Length: 255
Image 1 (cartoon, rainbow, N blue to C red):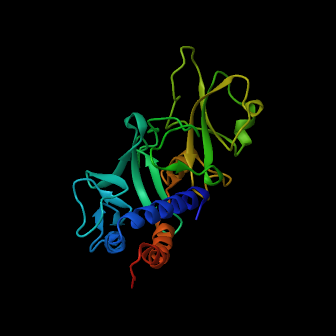
Image 2 (cartoon, helix red, strand yellow; image 1 turned 60 degrees about the vertical axis):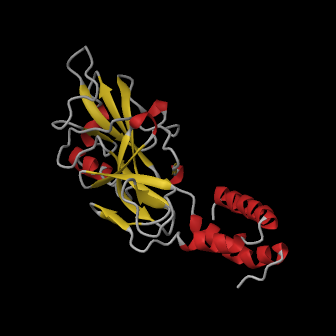
Image 3 (cartoon, rainbow, N blue to C red; image 1 turned 135 degrees about the vertical axis):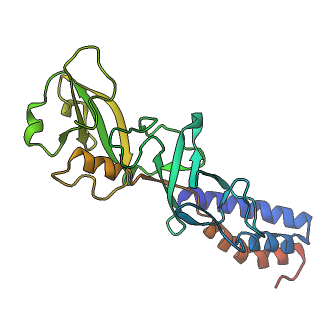
């Protein structure tokens, strides 16, 4: 369990203890609540076949299940969620074992290598209830350059985006050159005639491999990136272990 989950767990346990001292019959209610964390039948949408608590589809609640902590939407047979400012992300996978959800910006489209994310990546982006995993994210920078980068001809770092993209944001002056730069580049690593137009994040393990074309990189970006959510399985385990003690403190024998 991560630090935030540990803190939340212990805080909730303390609140439960105080509540049970006031309401001795609360143990049964809490056990019923925990049982409702496990839905009779998980929801599904598109390629996401097991949408279980703490997730759920808005407007399609599963049977005998608590309201979701992380509500998702099903749009055109695709599972999505909206971050702050209405930025749309497609949900590609939910991993209940390591508490991650893999998403991709809805602006990136399969079989359309000229498509780009709606929003440039930043660690300060607000993903709502989810948190960004810095150590598991790789960056791809989109550059527009007034001059051709000399090292690009034989480089696996500067990769020309043509014919897919002529430039992320068309400069007034022409001609111009458009590249992607792989890696968490420092300012000094960027050629003098270039500017950064966009940063895109990816959790793909193979996006930094050598001899990639821009089409290869675009396909890697479609893999998306992972966000973290609070693991409630540890919380459920702690509450179930805590209930007998809470019952004893409240004066009730709990089975």
